[in-house]
Image 1 (cartoon, rainbow, N blue to C red):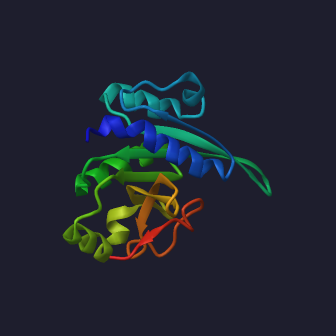
Image 2: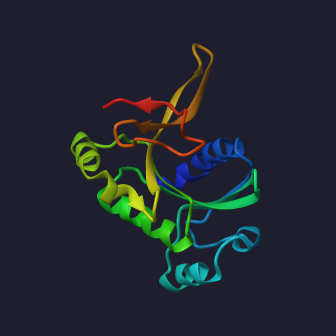
Length: 178
């Protein structure tokens, strides 16, 4: 399946997930167009870099979250790939670093190959980490029964062996064991 065909469905799944934490706005930005509302939340220099270099994340957005000390705004980036390559992880990290994103996701309908999975597990801090205490979350976009025997829906499957901890809203996601 072409990646572009997945963008809107992945955007909806992520929007639903992040909306459980606060006000969420996610847009498909793969073509380099950032809606004005989203541009207002992003760093001007980062937008300049994307336009100058002619690349951008597949999905970009923000989360406005009420905290005990006030309101915080968190940037979200997501890349959607038919098949995950190591270069896909670095591409996602690059976008997260340019935007200073709190959340960086790499999503594919295909699970990681066993060799890549083991490689990432052995070298996870170097492979998935960016900025202090942030990491690219690699997830499989999968169809599963929402209510057994009744409704099919899309979920994100995250490999629990890759991550020792996950940020909200992914802490209670369906976790895949090797």
